[in-house]
Length: 243
Image (cartoon, one colour):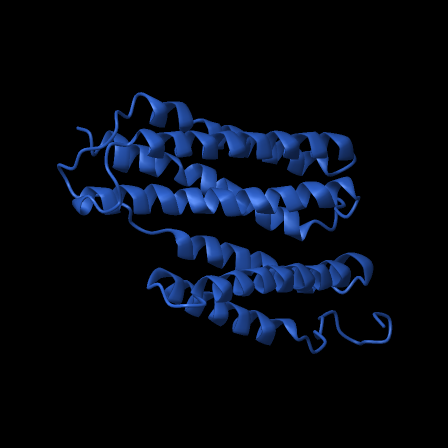
């Protein structure tokens, strides 16, 4: 099939996953609203929407992996699209998280300071994995395991921090600012951790090679964005807000 076409681009076959994913996302949203205002059947609709949405994601990504790894559709020209898309996605995530002056924050020199260097350290581990892909496959797996472990430790520390926080998200502008900024960043950490776990499994199965690892490359870029952004909440939310 690849040899018969006269161009290097991948013309995607018709797929049911975009429309099914859209309908399941709609069902999840409607179910969530019904559950929060307690309407009968809201929890059921929310649960079914989430289950089928995750199932669609699994099947969709399975097809993408099959097209790229087994069928060879992801040529160098095709790989430019995911690369540019990942860069634009990361750039779109950059925004202001500065809190108003004078709001109270946790002591920056306790748990926040302890948690801050963990993600940058995981960035070094994912860079190790990136270099190890070229001929040192076992080292790449070990490096990804180290990266995921550090990410889980960081998420655990943030959970402990929330448990110790004397305020909640409903406590005036401080609560909404603090929990939205740090929680949104923590959500990105969780998403990046899932990406890294998938990359680790693919590396273990031998899917990633020196010339074909766009999925890992996009994940590494995203993770470097996440670990660098970790410094901004420490400065703007914890340290500056506590001056």
